[in-house]
Amino acid sequence: MSHRFRSSAVSRLGVAGLAAGALVLALAGPAYAHNEVSASDSHALATDVTLTFGAEAESTSTGIVALRVELPQGIAPSDVTYLTGPEGWALAPSTGGYTVGGPALKVGTDASYQVKVRQLPDASSLTFKTLQAYADGRVDRWIDAPGAGADHGDTTGKPAPTLRLQPALPGATPMPPAAPSAAPAPTPPTAAVTPPGPAPGSPASAQTPTATATSETKSRHTANNSAALVVTVAVVAVVVTGAVLWWWRKRAPGRGSGPEA
Image 1 (cartoon, rainbow, N blue to C red):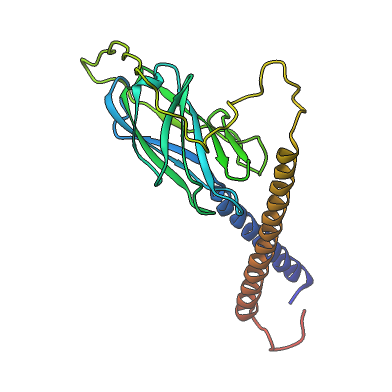
Image 2: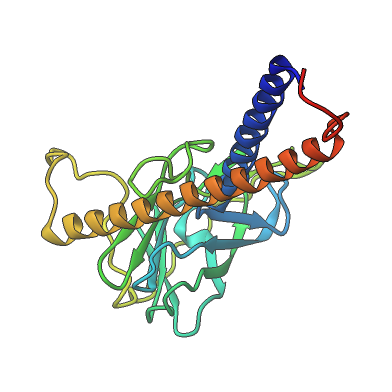
């Protein structure tokens, strides 16, 4: 076997290993947690629409206790009726939105609930900024614009749940505003979370000790996940390289019939 042919084969093996690593990284991307919304009718100006929200649990040490939602323009808190959710949870209207919360869910359990909206606005999409609170005080802020980068365990790259709307059906018209409720429902005791965004005039660097500790815990968790991913990529690359080398040795012409050229 010539030196040139051997070098070419080694180069192909290296390319195969890199391709295997890239495949593992591509498959790992969608595994990041997310917060989503879907609708029983996604047409603009549709009435009595059931919205289903799903919030994926990211913490490995504590459960979700509340989800605070900021409603998009065109939907008022009085337009929203609570349908179903985790056992013991309830909905409490707030200025510009509502909070759904109650007893802490089991660690690793996703939060899913449904509300009915009186009428969807005449828009192309609806964004529901959401704060996801945990029993230990941690808050995940799903408030970024749709299409933001993947979640890496910090406060960036967390896109808000967004619902894409189809054009209104022929004859659909806006309904008059609903009358406000006479007595709003009481706020669930475990559902108190900070509204989206820092308070006006507050320093961006101000953090409580609890928030700092939570950030450190999330950083360690992210580092562990990254290390596991690197090990997985290495193992897959070794397996693919070995398989290609075995195949090349089996198919190489003239092997064992004489000295190399």
